[in-house]
Amino acid sequence: MPVARHFAVLAVAAGLVAGARAADPPAPPPKPEQVARLITDLGSEEFTVREAATDTLTRIGLPAFAALEAAATHSDREVRYRSQRILGLIREHDLKRRLEAFLSGKEAEGDYPLPGWTRFKKTYGDEGQTRSLFVEMQRAEPDLLRALEEGPRGAADAVSQRVAQVQEALRFGGQPQFTPGQVVSLLFVASEDDVSLPAATMTLFYNLCYQQPFREAIEGQSRGGVPRKMLASLIRRSDENSAYMAMQVAYQLNMPEGIDPALKILNGKGGVRVGTYSAYALATVVRTGDAAHLPLVEKLLTDASQVTQIQQNNVITKLQLRDSALAAAILLTKQELKDYFDLASKPAITEPRSILINPSLIGFKTDAEREAVFKKWEVYKARQPQQPAEKPAPSP
Image (cartoon, rainbow, N blue to C red):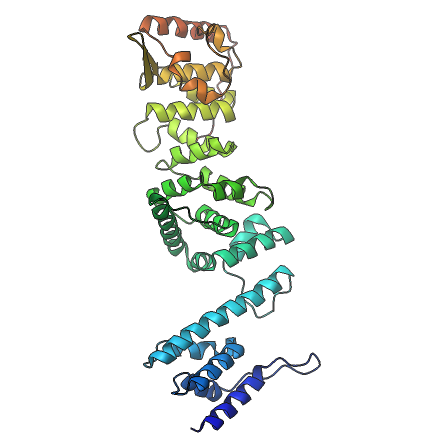
């Protein structure tokens, strides 16, 4: 076909999609045979023809999408390459158009919802601020949100892959640059109830929460506290394999939801209770819980699992889980630690973790010393009025 004829075809197709005046009716979509000729021209020997066809198909946009998808597997390498490139541009342009309409609340009637939006608005609402946040997420991680739309299993795989990539970069000394939109997208998908992440991914994910971009997104209020709500949801449903990491993150960020994984640890969910983990869990209960959790704490008053120890002047002071539990019980009942432990020469400390993991404050050198202090607790309990049996604190 002569070059002039090529350009005549291109001109006709271009006229169908060219910007019209506001008063003009919209141009009709191009006919399938016109799109087919343009796709053929993508493989022309003439560079100018290939470029013109590429430009015209890009401007035609969605009406040419199906034909371009088919051409993406064409036997001609040039046709394949240009079709794939045009498809990417069409997706990009269409997403930009849809996001602008979405922000103004003027989505086209025929547009399907943005991937993930139905889930997002159900939990976080449909207002100007939440729409702005969702647009930020769409621009940052469209593939991740598309994976969530397609199903929870694929979404879990996408999060795992993304987190592993970031962790690998950190392992080799890199510092991945997260945008807030990327952080919130990861939080959103990971926190969905039906997205089940492997234990290894959960551990890596919680490690990322200590990275500055994550901390800023979670602690900042410019996004209506939505990222914090997402993390809270993830922390609440963390299973026994990730409960400790979830509790640690919640403690660092002063999130009350940390009590849920703490109770799982204290109830021994998932296997053998670890003394150190349980001591940290007791600190979380003291910080976040109340006297309703006392029965669970009292169950640990006979647990001699070692938490830690120190040695000074050849004298060993041991801290057992029952010692941490006793200190927790004292604090939950609003008593003074100094009435039980010798703290006269010790600095005043109020942070639960600094108390319950500290053998120099609440540890014992001998069992006789321990027994004497525990006797004080028994005397205190005997003096308390008999209360009707209470339901134990709810356990996740």
